[in-house]
Length: 367
Ligand code: ADP
Ligand code: MG
Image 1 (spheres, rainbow, N blue to C red):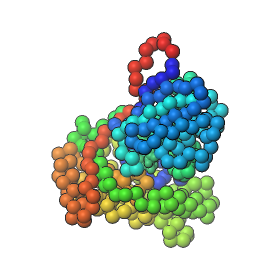
Image 2: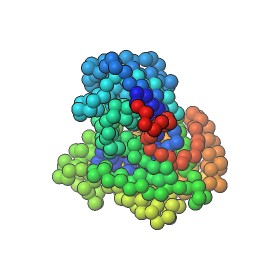
Image 3: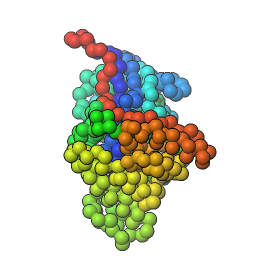
Image 4: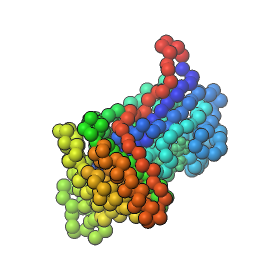
């Protein structure tokens, strides 16, 4: 098979924020929004990449791929091909046309969707068979080492491993997964997403600083990772103590939410979502006024719970609401934003969707 179409979704993290680089737990769902790649093998050792969402066409010789050699959006694609080849997988030249509807830079993980779609396309069309966990690790390596973003493994795992109408409970230490039913409509509920449109501020530097804080705290406490703490330790300097308090409490909240979902007590997760936001605002310090205003407006308008999702410093808020309250909550957020002269937010409801997949018809027995 020389060509095909592959899709990988963006994601929303229900809970478990800034836990994935602390060996902790996360609970994302995949979105219906995808990055779609139309891929065709080439025999000339060249990677040619274009996107409907970005400028320029890149033509790169595979032998020239190295960290630092490619910048901008093309690095997410080239990095995946580089990482696969680094690990000895025989990936040759490709032409890749990218299209999609995951909002870029909104905290919905368009980057991991782009990486996952690339990984699936080039491995499948090269006859390289790798399980989804391995693809998640390799695409994370691409973003860490080639793009230069020190992200954890949640986003890539969500895009590659998630299932329709389920949330993905992932232990980022062991990569153990559990698909927990997450189907809100039959329960009369909805997941309202507010894309605050707040420009991402200081994201890369602040993200790296939080990682350093966590690493330092684990070192001082003599544990391999903050995941290994059951109780926050107050013997640390104030800032590190607050970082630790967030991570420890957040891990516990993920497990609590997972158990509530397993036992069909969905409404009861609401307060835990709001607690997560408070912790991210006060202890982890990764929110911005747009995120806080949205959460406050949603809760005041009757949402069962609300929190920022993704790395923070802009991006989206999610909120668990009765389906009859979606309109009132949307109006309340819009009014609060207008009052503050913030950019008008995008509001929509999300359903848990499928992970990355081949999207064209594959005729049987033809190659
Ligand atoms: P997020 O992953 O939350 O959307 P990131 O900053 O991590 O935000 O990744 C966004 C970047 O990913 C974009 O700036 C762009 O470089 C790249 N990207 C994502 N989707 C596409 C696409 N469809 N076409 C081109 N580049 C894309
Ligand atoms: Mg990203």
